[in-house]
Length: 316
Ligand SMILES: [Zn+2]
Picture: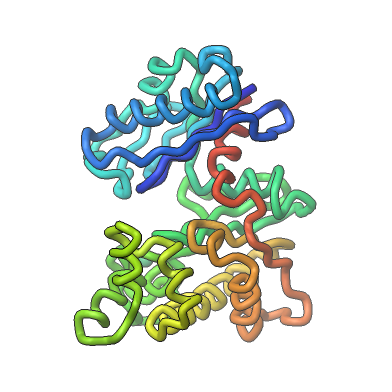
């Protein structure tokens, strides 16, 4: 048995899997809002201990534990820097693999969160019959990962940043500071900022009312899904804009790479599912050079657990 951990900006997901990567135990807890990297290491260890208890095994008896982390991940060194989505992470590189290994009494292998999610869909999920894959993670930001001829394509370490593909020159301001990126239209963070701006200017919307009713402070994926179901005008418009941006950017990436399969995951992708994947397929079509031979575009098959199961794949 091995463990897998997915560290996100709002939650930590842990799993314990068998040698066929079947999930035997799982647990989830919030990412600590304060205390910085040591508090995060504590929470990761606690989440894994819960998943191990759920599977009826001692964490120290696991073959190893994989961890998918945001930020700049140096896998051989076991360090994470610039994890901006994690509160209080700070500037320097933190030895997260060693800190977690000490707490668990197990070997810890580190990987980039998006890449492990893509690897999981490739090995076990929606692309397991495909030699090449573009994974698009539609969440707070828009991340991506590429597998070509069965091998991850990492470039010089930063490949797959499809969220910063330009879909509109001189367009909306992106959280990265540039203009017209796909993420400026499709990232949940950018969509929330635009919704707040329009609501502040008097636009009618149920988005923030749903957020308050559910005791949230951010417009999480489930809130967008509920507003869409109610036919909220602003939510419908902003999601429509996101779908167009995704279709444009993904089609451009397909023109360049000609992958067999595109998998749409991430918080929003997973929550909205096939009906919206269908809309992304339609939005891609006008931009595809070989429009008579589109790639398969599928929702991520492993859902919420994909990141944690993919992290377990890191255990050699
Ligand atoms: Zn950008």
